[in-house]
Amino acid sequence: MQVTNDQGEVLAGAAARSFGDWLLLDTLWVSEALRGQDIGSKVLAEIEAMGLARGCTKCLLDTLNFQAKPFYEQRGYQVQWVQEGYPKTGCKYFMIKQLSE
Image 1: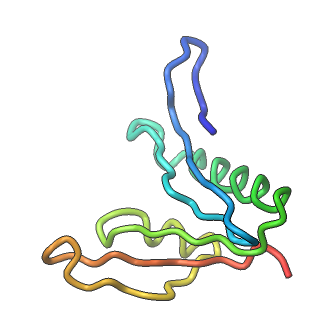
Image 2: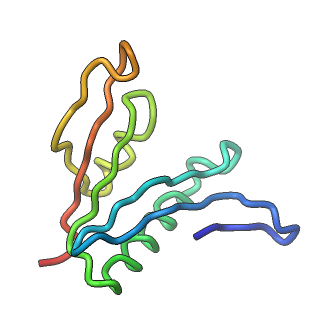
């Protein structure tokens, strides 16, 4: 899904797919100029709702330590596994959220 302005410019978006009862969030992006305006939260909520409509009960994503880990934690995601040394000196966090029972 994507969010565009009246001129058709992409301002935010997300890509996800379902696999069994899992929603796999591949990408969530918000234009740097619009960050901090709750757009990312709305896009994430919409993607989660799409997953629920497909029968998904859980969502899985990954993020790097310099990216959006606190954003996802504030929205109910929990770290399940940390890949140390990725890429080289950082960490990659695999996070999940229970969408429904």
